[in-house]
Length: 308
Image (cartoon, rainbow, N blue to C red; front, side, top):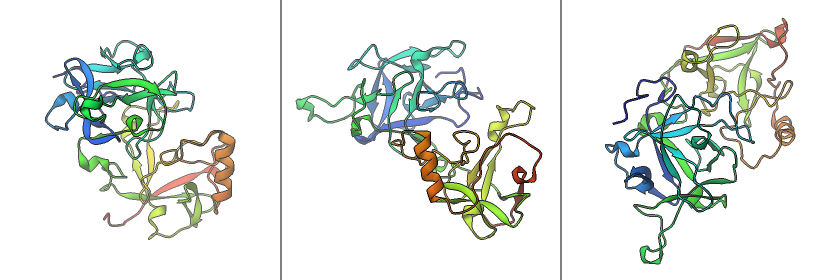
């Protein structure tokens, strides 16, 4: 078993994952005889368990702004590596956490915990993982033993992947945070209003304690790893009704939105901003240069509500 990193706070903060393809959801990505293949799922087989290394995700993005990650096999310590070219097998290389190796960095075109999407090379997002169908004798299907190659994106099921935790309880929209208390977020300038989600946009609405769209979960786990410039721990705010987190806007003065459910077909920040402005029906939440003004002073107040 691969020992390094089992307690490493960057390598496996959420345990191990399974990776499977839309072309055959009954198979999982595995290491077999030193090669990357699809295999019949077996939770006890650590060759099918993957760590997701996110150490560089805060600093390195692809051309669409998606953070990089590496997939490291638990049983072997091998990382999924870019192939030597189109139609060539994806390689495996010994993972060394002390080295920076761009050839093991990948990005996802959308949130792979929710949607099937493309796992692509960091430097060329048009090239990504492809489950190579068998020959005619094998029925031309994706099956046990199918090899993984690099091909251009063609929107086929063979290139559509999903990454889920091996723990089913972590695969809900709240990612295992269902039992956490919820809070209300309100602004000093509008104390009778609370932060909510409408049509995928973060805005303010008249406070309604029974409205789950106004109930937020404060996930403090990132604070163990990430601090701001003043040393304050980072946290994530997740909507109880949708499971979406508040994400920084595309720039100062733009509405805050979350990309977990956004379409990968959105091309520009201008398109995304204009559509957000048309849909939202309450005061929008924006990021501004910090000033001591009551309009940007927010308060978290925990609700006494039962978690169902």
